[in-house]
Amino acid sequence: MTKSGDAPLEPVAALWVRRAVVLLFVNLVVSAAFAVLTVAFATNVVDYQLAAGSAKTAEELRISLWIRAAMVLVIAAFYWFIARRMLRGRRGAYVRVRTLSLAGLVAVSYLLATAAYPLWLRGVQVIQWLVLLALVIVTNLRPVRAAFPRPPKAPREKGSGKAAWSLVLLTPLIAEFSLGTVPVRMLYLVLLYIPIYGAGTLLIRELARRVGGGWPTIAVLGLCYGLLEEGLALQSLTSPHLYGAAEWGPRWLGINTTYTELNLPYHVVFSVIVPIALVELIFRRNGRQPYLRRGGMVLAGFVTFLGAVLLRLAVPLSEDPGYQMSLAAILTVLALIVVAGIVALRILPRHRFAVPAAARVPAPAVAGLIAGTASLAFLALLFPIGDARQPAFAHGNWVLIPMVVAAVIAIGVARQLARWSASPEWTERHRLIVVGAALVGHSIFGLITRAKTLPDQLVMAAVIAVTALVIVKLARRDTVQPAAVPDGLPAD
Image (tube, helix red, strand yellow):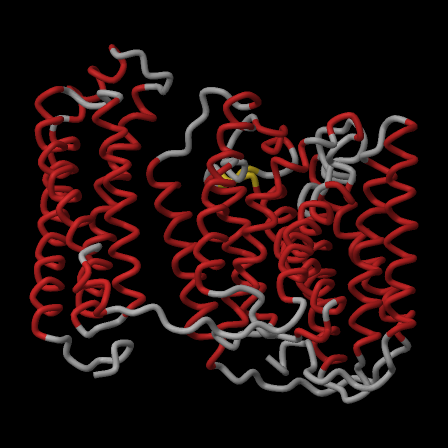
């Protein structure tokens, strides 16, 4: 049989795999029972945890109980899917079961060791611990491991590792440092951003390129990233206190609208698209080929999750203590991430976009000037300048004007870039100059508005100069031949 296909497993292996599947569903039943009990007796559980010295509020503890119950429903559907694939001999499903069982065993062991739940609930946890232990043992037996042999490693293009690490390290520098949000005296904070920014953008790039997606896929996954960081980790999209975002503009349905309009597109462009485009232009030899193998992707996903947790613990708990999104808001953000992820990975790669009428392509310098000016204008319209609590012009009856103008600029420039890139006159040099100019424009905004001390101003000026020099050097390296694959929406 072909172990990686859908052929039936060998008799002995099939017996043990069926036992593993049974244990998988027994664990699910026990998990569901535990979740139902915690919700049904939420008051008792919350009182116990508060008496045990929990730093969370009663409302935060209740929300965590409901989230756990909701996650059980999601996992139930996932278990059914993964069990079917494992019975068909799919190694990917086997690896997931093996990993999840070990992670679950560690998690339950931690909960038992810390006595996080009342004694009567710990009895259920002991049963779950035993089931998970049995599942770990069964999935690591020799007949089971032999039924899912490790495939030969796929060859990687030379330079893939350097490209991946460049993306990991460049992303937080582009998204945070080059905007001036990190003062020189606090430069160490960039290390805090590497896990979520670097690993997150690398994961997005790998997912998009593996499914054959182009820039629309990357852009929508960038939206997922923004919702993860701003919506769940920082909870800044709804917080009435963090960064003073509630004072930037209208606050509708509990959402900081101006802050949201600024930061979600910002993450799409400067946390995801620009770093990926720049690294792919630097490492042109690797093209759109994946930089990582499957294990590297799993690691990138794990580090991204840890980065979100680290950001949650490092920022809101100190700068926005006591605020917790409502359960409805959390579930809404999670649903948006899931839906957007499905659209990005399952629908967009298969969709053929209508090619707009190709516009006459200007010189690279002109295209860059337009991109850089648009970048600077978008930030200036939505970002508070200096010590102001609101963006420019966002006062009184004029509060919606900068939001509308910023949206028009963003949509108009995106549409124009799509039309230009549909033309055979569009080259790699155009793409490079546009990306570089957008970077310079957003750093000029940082120099003008964010750098408040002389050292910060000197550093920001150096960042602008270095960015411009690097772009010029790369442009001289590039030819003026049309790009092998146009980079606008129509080509994707």
